[in-house]
Length: 108
Ligand code: 5GP
Ligand code: ZN
Image (cartoon, helix red, strand yellow):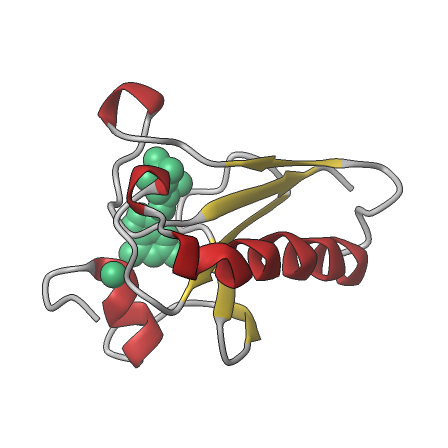
């Protein structure tokens, strides 16, 4: 957990969010500024700064992000119509929140 991280605050329950999933390893909540009818952030509970900071110990976390996204897409009714899974990496890649997260974006 990082004291000054807004996603750690959400995970701790210190900042409100519309959760769509809460598990042991990963949580998912609606993006505050959605770019599509479905725009969910799938976020590891562990504070990992970016894709560049992943270690071998994080392999299971990364797998869980993708498997959970697949289930959430199904729950949201966009599995067959289709969706995007995106990581923005560092400033040049559009990352503004430095707690690893995957965007799940889809159109119903
Ligand atoms: P990035 O550009 O870092 O990949 O994406 C960060 C995302 O977090 C943005 O799409 C932004 O709208 C979202 N975001 C920023 N602050 C908050 C917040 O306090 N709550 C929620 N739910 N989303 C946030
Ligand atoms: Zn964090």
